Image 1 (cartoon, rainbow, N blue to C red):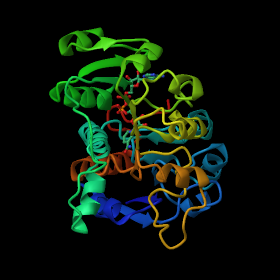
Image 2 (image 1 turned 45 degrees about the vertical axis):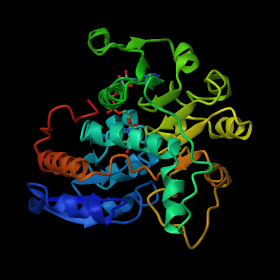
Image 3 (image 1 turned 180 degrees about the vertical axis):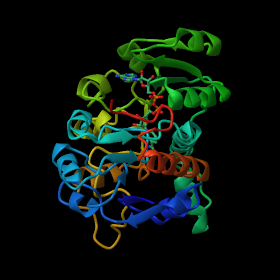
Length: 333
Ligand code: NAI
C-alpha cells in the first residue's frame, strides 16, 4: 500500500481522486492547508505528496520533504513554475505532473470569459434578477471579423485558436517555437510579439510562466496593444505586471481584461474571503473596474479535466515504488 499526503484539498479533488482507478490502493492523507517549507514535515512517512498550483515547492520545502523520506511529488496540474526542479533533482525527489488533462476546458473558459465581459452577460444577469430590463451600458462588439492574438500555441493555445476561428476571427500567433505546418493548415500567421500586440483586438495568453516570460506584459508591451483591445490571461498571474495593468485600466487604454489567474493569487484564490474582505489592494482595485472580469483559477474545473487529473495522479503515485512513471509526466531526470 502506497501512502500519499495530499495538500490544498478541496471537496471536488477528493471526490474525483477517490473514484480514479487504483485509488483504493493508496492510503490518502488529505490536508486542507497548502504545502510549503513550514508544513512539509506533515508528509513524514509518505511515499508521495500531491501538490497543486499554489503550493510552494521551493528548495527549503523540498529539503524538508527529502529529510522526511519523500521521494516523489505528484503535481496535479500542468504548470510547474512553483517547483525548483534543480533542487528536486539534488534532493532525489522525482516530480511528475499531468501534462494535458483537458486543454479544451481551459480554452473554453477563455472564450467564456471574453463573451461574458464583452456582451456584459454578468451585468445583464444581475439586472434582470431585479426586474431591470434596460439595455443601457450593455453594448458589446462582434467577435466575427476581429483579430485575436494567441501567445503560446501549445495544447491550450491551439484549442483556443480553433474556437476563435469558429467565430470567424482572424487568428495571429506568437511562439518562440512556431509550428509552421499547423499554422499553414489553420490559416494562422505567426508574428513577433510586438506586431501581434499592435494587430490584435483580443490578446489571449497561453504560455507557461518561466524566468523569460515573467511580466511579459509590462508597461512597454501593454502600451503596444491597440487602444480598446481586450486582454485575457488564463495561464499564470505573473505573466502580467499588475501595477502596469492597473495604470492601463485607469487611463482607459484597454477595452477589457479577463483574468483567471492573478500575480498574488496564492492564499487568496480557492478560499472564501467573503466574511473578511480583501487585504490585497491591487486585486481589490482590479475588481472595481467595470471592464475587468476575474475568476479564481477555475479554467481547469470541468468533470473531464478533474477525472483525467485524478487518473494520471493516482497512476503515478502507484508507480512511485517502481519509479516507472506514466509516459510524458516526469519533469526531473
Ligand atoms: P504547452 O506546453 O502545450 O504550450 C505552451 C506553449 O507556450 C508552447 O508552444 C511554448 O513554446 C510556448 N511558449 C513558451 N514560452 C513562450 C513565450 N515566451 N512566448 C510565447 N509562447 C511561449 O502548455 P499548455 O498545456 O497549452 O498550457 C499553457 C499554460 O496554461 C500552462 O503553462 C499553465 O500555466 C496554464 N494553465 C492554466 C490552467 C488554468 O486552470 N487556468 C490550467 C492548465 C494550464
